[in-house]
Amino acid sequence: MLSIYYPSPHTGTRAMKSLRAFTLVEVLVVVIVLGILAAIVVPQFVNAATGAEHIAASQLVAIVQRKIGESYARTGEWPTALDDDWFSPPGLPRNPYTDGAASLTVQNIAGKLELDIKHSNGGPIIYWYNQANGLFHTRVPWQGNNADTLALYNRVNHVKAVNY
Image (cartoon, rainbow, N blue to C red; front, top):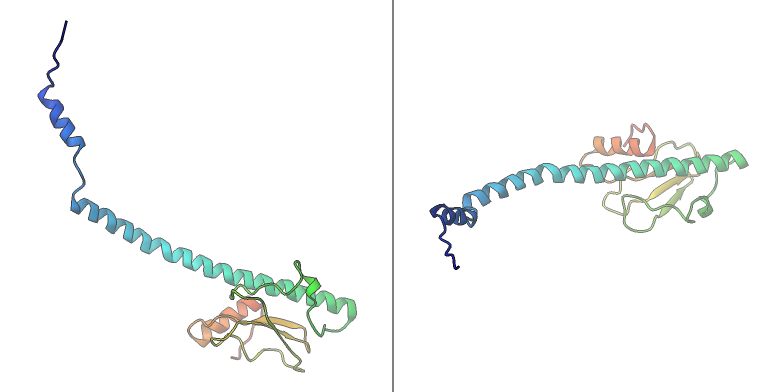
């Protein structure tokens, strides 16, 4: 026997409700909420990356300073140069503030405890090693003013420099 199906009057309404699309206002609300969340979250990631660079630079300075101290303990003199074999792989570790290879300026300044140049001043950021006292430092990026740059320099290089 053949049976005929007659949909109920409510079936069509339910089908139309399931095909309903979002209104422009609903889409705008979602976009605005996502924009607000992005404005809150993105700066957190930027700050985390910058903080990681500072921590990496600080650890690198401590490692190199320890290697210099070990050399001094063996020989009784500050090394005249940093030995590439102190590091694995050989060579001075890359400065976290730069993309290129590490560069080093060796100074021999008798009696000088602090370095005059603490930030890159727009040039390449490099390491400094003072043969006279065995101090190893890295320049830091400019922080917008002398006080903040000096504070970062002190934190990264484990010093308490007061002059700029």
